[in-house]
Image 1 (cartoon, rainbow, N blue to C red):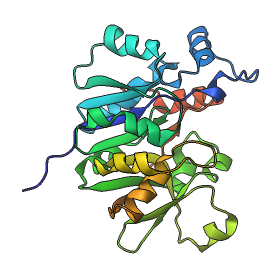
Image 2 (tube, helix red, strand yellow; image 1 turned 180 degrees about the vertical axis):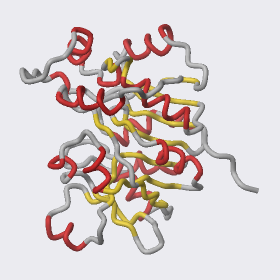
Image 3 (cartoon, one colour; image 1 turned 90 degrees about the vertical axis):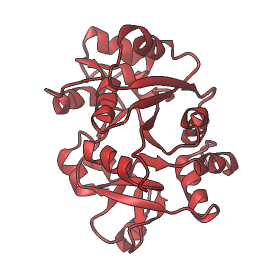
Image 4 (cartoon, rainbow, N blue to C red; image 1 turned 90 degrees about the horizontal axis):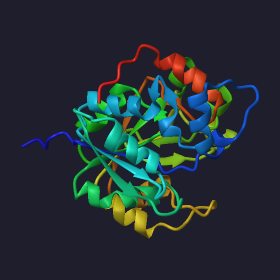
Length: 274
């Protein structure tokens, strides 16, 4: 008997938004965009409507029905918007609190009660992922990750080529399983990898074992608990394999004020249906 496709997705929305808060005289924003950028809450940056609406609408299009937003204790604006200002019909939106900004794996751990022992998707709140990535991960079994072709990112993302070249790369074996995520690989390491390069954009299908990994890993050099370390622990210590889903489509990124106009251009005409 085939398992039902997963319906739960976790969106990491706890980030401090340091780069978004940073002033940039070269960027012109309207009053609402400037006001929200000052708060650093990237998820609510208005691009016709809050950016996160587009992300959630894409999840609903892919078949996800329960969404958990991992937020900071003081992220009242996000709670108010999704609990009072909009009434989603296709998805149910819930919240988990990451008390302190202790890294992405710590944010995932905050969603353990929401997961309830079931598989779930994890994505960033400041990325817009192609529908095919969200759909294919939903239809997998076990652990999996979506990796994005570097050339497709160059061709269709709003992210600069220089930034794309700095992204983490997924190393995959001959059976299509993830071996490891290479963070900021040096030129020699990159040269030894087969082409095309496949980039990790923090788009994961996890099972309940990930929570043990999130609890067992040590802080990174940055002093944070990171998803790639939890994934490696899950592979090396817990014995789970991750299917690599190769996607030849771009991911959009909303990191700083300079990204707002390019995101708006890419999303122009995109319908939102929550």
